[in-house]
Length: 274
Ligand SMILES: Nc1ncnc2c1ncn2[C@@H]1O[C@H](COP(=O)(O)OP(=O)(O)OP(=O)(O)O)[C@@H](O)[C@H]1O
Picture (cartoon, rainbow, N blue to C red):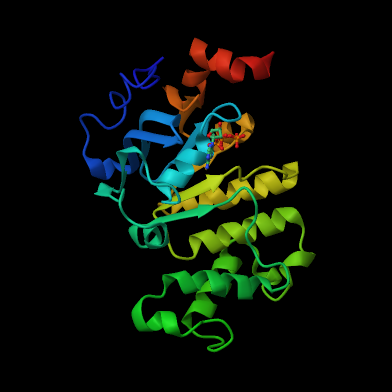
């Protein structure tokens, strides 16, 4: 086992951030804590996600994975600790402005408008990119075929989804909708993309299509942080794995490395293997 398969927070940065420059990491969290009404849900969590790679955040139900996503994306304010994206401290940046720091996310539940077409949904997503005067002019309907429309169509084409552009989202298969939601999240060109259970509910073919889509994003330099229960999926795409239990990091390393950590086997993978 390498030194990166660390136990607990004592070794939190020993195998990740220490000795390297901040720019090596798409994401660093340092000493992150979050309490709700006096109940600590995330405790003194530190880890780093290498730039241009996929990192998995895994752990049993209730371990705190979604809470970490909410802290990184700014939905929650941490009780303590810092969040750095590409070396920039974004801890105090409001959620709506984190896209400008390079952070985008998808959700467990697809957030597309069912009654609109695929391209209309993507254009609405584009609206968050607009700042200043641009924000006053919705790209939706008012400016058909303008630059954002072309970018949205191009993004669909690149992922093999171009034929769906004019179809109503509600009529599409679940796996296609999930990938449309992924295109929506990537249109702003995030450097760090947070994916909450991207493979949940997908059949094997859809899962392979999603993997190809994510590999395309990674090949273009997008760093991924993935919460996922599907370990074969994690093994396919994630070069780095962080394991949480009861809001604390219990291991960090490759999937093979963390599988060997007794605490991980007890907390999560062990029970699955049994
Ligand atoms: N807003 C909140 N208020 C109070 N407690 C919360 C809140 N959000 C999360 N929690 C608690 O924090 C803990 C971690 O929840 P979280 O959803 O982050 O876990 P998870 O690892 O994502 O779980 P799952 O795999 O089931 O999605 C749970 O005990 C949950 O009840």
